[in-house]
Image 1 (tube, rainbow, N blue to C red):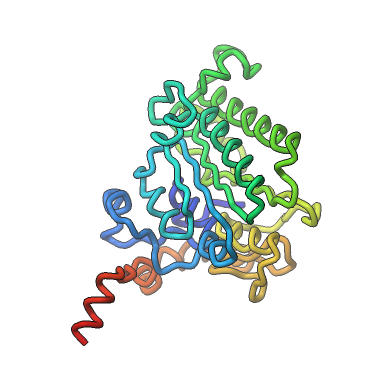
Image 2: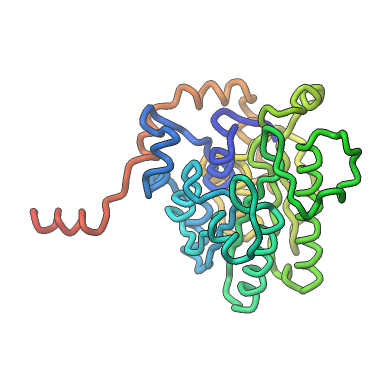
Length: 304
């Protein structure tokens, strides 16, 4: 799973996985624009929109402030009704948090509580969790993991932080399974993008770097996709796993990795795909075309 054009940061990785497209930008979609506008890619139909139409209650939990790069606006624009960022998590769970908001232990504790309530309710739900311990430049090591990673003390902090997050996620999954909370549930684990420049970048660049994505649940076949893919292929793959009908195994630019159809990256190669995305101009305007508010619509009706 390579890093395709315009999928190389956290928000772009979320958009790719949820909407099946790179985060196409215009001159006006700066970080300030993303953080100050309430509509985020209103012209797209994303995973949250599809699930909302099918009656899912949807939850997003992040350790970052919701305004960071427009995370809160993105999920609010696409079918999520419960959206919790750093302030909400720290207030609910307690503790000092971290230098940027809520640490991964707090986020996952909160997520387990949300998962318990969602399963007890008996209605279909989705829970999207964004952890951040391994974020560059040096990672954010949760206090809970200090001295617990098993790595030598002189190891760069970001490697301790990544190991810590992996341990916390494993504990979260094991606890959820032990409580019977994973029944009739599809679990997706993914990286949003390749590790950004950090204190260990030189070490990482010695390897063939790839994004991570795994899917598990009842009825999902045991297989590994060995062709070229990108995070845009996560969107249709999750829909496929949930039994949502797809036209030609495709949703937006993505192709389900559970089927037999090759991805666009496989067909065209990464370089050609990226060139086409960099040159795109028509689609990006339609992606960001704002939907009229109810008051705008009412005013137009009166004028007509």
